[in-house]
Amino acid sequence: MIVVNTETIPGMRIVSLKGMVQGNTIRAKHIGRDIMAGLKNIVGGELKGYTELLTESRQQAMERMLAQAQALGANAVVNVRFSTSAVAQGAAELYAYGTAVVAEDIR
Image (cartoon, rainbow, N blue to C red; front, side, top):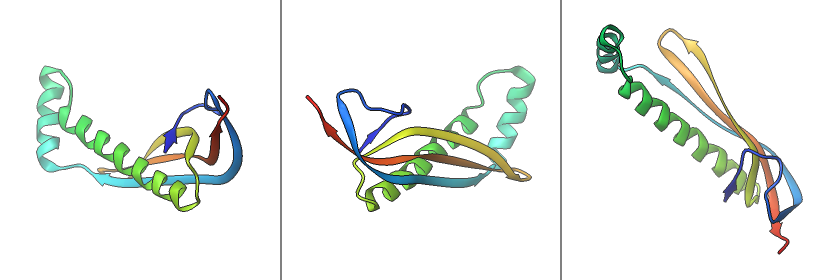
């Protein structure tokens, strides 16, 4: 599956539009991560626990989006974007979306 954040794929032509696809996940903060984040706020530095949480969330949302695209018969997703939003105290949604297409090589 080809995944790009552009409207076109270099060297390929979009021959069929399958529609918008999306994947999301909602994650809550972990008390251990909160304690470490509180300490990092005092001394400064990267909040590695939150970095890992967001990386896992992005991966899961992307996997769900790609599964939807595959179910539609697409071989690529173009114009991929990510969005985040707070949905409750201590919980956030990570949302991935794009347009599922069938693309063919023009070379």
